[in-house]
Length: 79
Image (cartoon, rainbow, N blue to C red; front, side):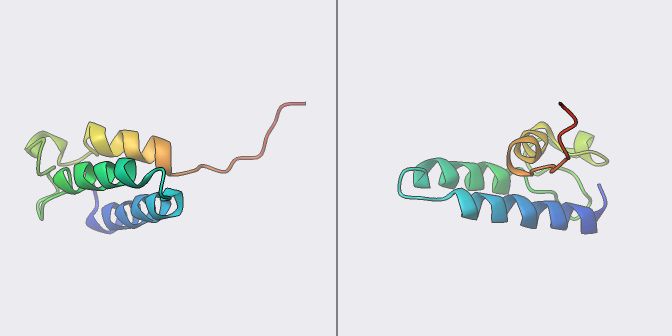
């Protein structure tokens, strides 16, 4: 994945986690931050934990985080 896009995604996911943090969610948010830090991309673009096979695409941990923490605001088309 492009380093610039990866950095923007990283910033957006961690900003979303910060918005969700409360006394009730503090441990869960801390766990997500730890997991995402362990799966951060290296300078070559590979996932630190998963290895080089994720050089061109996000590893599964970042795909899940993106799905859950990045909102895709789309207009509702249902009647």
